[in-house]
Image (cartoon, rainbow, N blue to C red; front, top):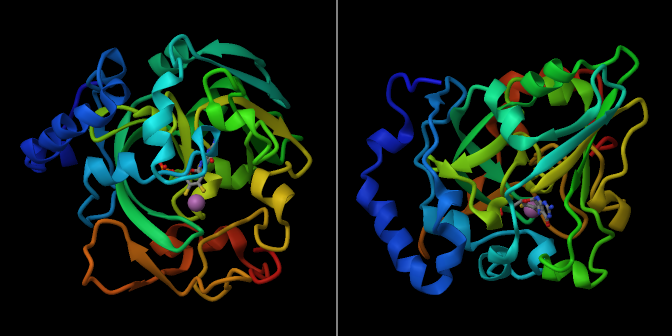
Length: 303
Ligand SMILES: Nc1nc2c(c(=O)[nH]1)N[C@H]1C(S)=C(S)[C@@H](COP(=O)(O)O)O[C@H]1N2
Ligand SMILES: [Mo]
């Protein structure tokens, strides 16, 4: 895929984040060095927000990835142990061409784009991330979705020898997520293989993770090894753990509070000590694009 026009990495003073990367090399060299950070070729996207992205440092040092520990700094410290090459994804269930596919083969078919998305965690913080990825619909169309399929289920790798968090039963492994088929086919829904123009840092879900920008961050499952098409609503990790707090839909919604905190506002990571909280937007600001998917649904019931 030839790069056309300007991407964010062309207009960002590159030394800003390259310097940060050099600084970080002291703390976690293995995480960002080596072939896993090969340059990617991609096009810009009309779906990107014009808000300024967070720094690479913010994006790679404040993470939720419980396979590597529950602390925000644990993934940056521990994810270096993960082997991400070779990597394959099993695509099964109600598909025409089920199989276990090499990630390299999947990627040959899919045009990479830069998508600068707002990302809103259920914990009421947010970031702006310049992902590199491709539309999930492109992959699903390639393997052929059978007419009976209504949902897509995703699973993360289970490899406790490399994922220290999996040595404890903090969550029921594998981490699982799911989407309704129309949500999965929506053009905003991407599989991301990189950010800031480079391959995905391990703490962000290398080598491939989901990004669904109108839903709370936990729907964006990392290090995916299985994608299953089904006619049953899939089980999802946070819903299994605490159904009264985390529903299947998990759409960003400032009008429906989490039982233990308000979802009306958010703290932008990296904004500085004196920046105020900002209002959370309906569907995280993607209302125009996705509200029609939920027409007629009571979003306080289907949270
Ligand atoms: N496999 C897996 N995927 C996961 C998680 C996790 O713990 N394990 N955490 C989720 C949560 S709660 C958030 S907010 C995002 C964080 O993504 P980031 O670290 O790239 O910002 O990943 C999501 N995907
Ligand atoms: Mo989250």
